Each structure stands twice: as structure tokens, then as C-alpha cells.
Length: 95
Image (tube, rainbow, N blue to C red; front, side, top):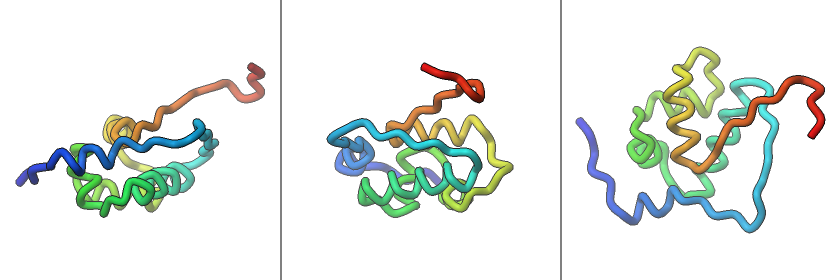
């Protein structure tokens, strides 16, 4: 059963920061910490954030806890929902 999401909750998902922040995640646990921090900064409970991202609460909980076998498409959906993006670089790459 899908929950209806109100406009105020949708606005909470738009996390605005003074300066762009970068984080280097080397494993699923670090990705989970980044997602949890973004959710808390948005002032959302897991159920609210999961509904806004179009995933289940259990999935979001697993993601935040660093479960290494999650569906990549859903992980990207959550990251996108929080305004986060993924950048892939070769090891040793210099900009």
C-alpha cells in the first residue's frame, strides 16, 4: 500500500547546503552513513524518506546500515531523491 506524500515532505527532500560537500565512500557502510546523514539533515523519519524516494522502509534501513547486496538501481534512486550523485574515477586519477 503506497502512502500519499504531501508537498511539505517533498520540499524537505530538497537539501540545500551552503557549499557543495564531497564524500568519498569506499564501501557500502560509508554510503549508508552518507544517506543517513542526508535523511537526518532533511528532518525525515525513515518511513517518510522511503516513501518520497519510492522504496520500502526496510530497503532504506538496509541501505543506511551498509548492507552490501542491495539493488543498485534502488540505491541510485535513493541517492537521487536526496540530491546526491555518484562519481566514478579510476584509482590514481588526477583532475
